[in-house]
Amino acid sequence: MTMPFAEVIGDPVAQSKSPVIHGFWLNQLGIDADYRATRVTEPELANYLAERRTNADWRGCNVTMPLKQAIIPHLDHVVGPADIIGSVNTVTRDGDGRLVGTSTDGAGFLEPLRRQLETPHLFRMARIIGAGGAARAIAHALAEKNFTLVIAARRPEQAQDVVAQLPDDTQHHVVPLDHFSAPTDFAFDDRQGLLDLVVNASPLGMRGKAPLAFDWTHAPPGAIAYDIVTDPLDTQFLQLARDAGHETIDGLAMLIGQAGAAFRLFFGENAPRQHDVELRALITA
Image (cartoon, rainbow, N blue to C red; front, side, top):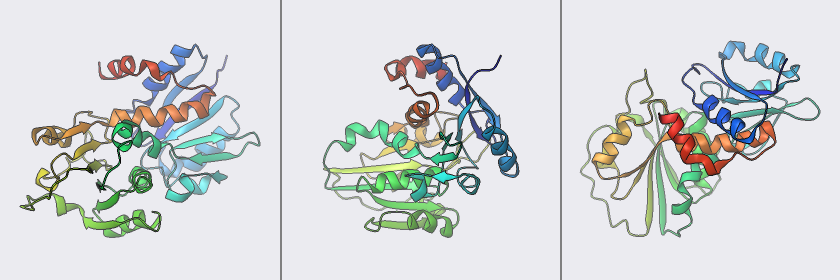
């Protein structure tokens, strides 16, 4: 007997917490369906999608690194905001059997910042480390909230690619990744009425990867540290931020936010977000 299912694909993918999140919501709602993790490499993408296209039980997939950009040429249609940012994290099949890509990353990223974003600010600035698919979605979402952006990447051309998909009126700067690694004696001005973010949108700090070298003298007082890495949840980046007196947001906040939007697309129901505290406890147990 088969049942409807969705999944997360990527390489690696075994560490993904998405199956726990979606499985919890399916159980809470009594939906007879499954959500799983499937390792798919970039050379395997075409065959994977061809097989899923003909599988009547398949409801779609979330896409994680390194496939968020690579998957686009294999899709029939890409809708906003993925068509603008050039990065897809969710694929579904429409009524005509077409594979449709979109992105819920930006909305998921902004979700834990709702309280801050409801307050008017004289100026908003975000320092974003990374230039991959997630960084593209995050940069676009923040640009639409009137942030000035500083994009740091290993290769300047990657950062320039991120900048190229931003709204034309976005104030932005591009710096090399090591710009933030050494201490600075820069004297920040009064940050009253300002909102500052420091975002790790790269794989640095993930289990098995090198840590992110960020010296917190580069962050003004009151800046919020936000790390989208989910394994481990409490990264060195966040630990050092707390030591320097900064508020922190871990990657689980974004993961649950973007998963909620994807869940609706896959299973046609709103995720039971009233159980977020219980869900977070389950994931971090």
